[in-house]
Amino acid sequence: MYNEVNFPVDSSKATEAYARLLEREGGRADHLRLAKLIYLADRKSLVSRGLPIVGGTYFSLRKGPMISEMTNFANCLNAPRWKECISPRFGNEIKLLKKVDYVELSQAELEILDATVDEHKNETTEELTQWCHENCREYENVFWTRRPITVEKLLKAERKSPKKIAEIIQRAESDLELDALISGL
Image (tube, rainbow, N blue to C red; front, side, top):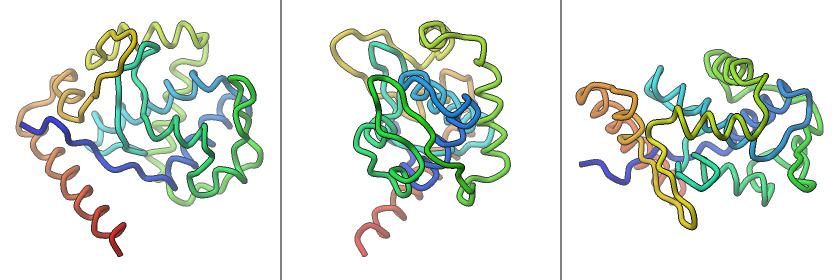
């Protein structure tokens, strides 16, 4: 039905969300840990509010579910304000370079990010990865490849009603159309 629909990534929110996770993690964290936390926060927001925090393309990978664009931002430092706020990866570690003014994220989004860190603060990165494998029902075990996780698949896994899924998919489609119009200007 809606097989390929996801919300467009919001790169400005992505920088702030990643910085908030880093801040809550004490200013530095493992890249894989941050990738899991940002996915879980986006997932929680999508399920509870019908909107993601950062959006983007979700995938099942060997190490669990991830947001493709967030990995790209962390590797290429190409989201707005990323270079001034967040360090390049040094090995697997990423550091917060300076405190961020949260102007793009709503209070509800900040609370979801904070709650996600708090929920998983006592888990190692490996334990968090295993938690995602066991608790994200939309995740598929893969080894050498990746499989897309659509908004519809995620919402079905969380047992949202067909009506609610249709409403959220319509919003995603509208956001994608608007994003295409804006990028074409």
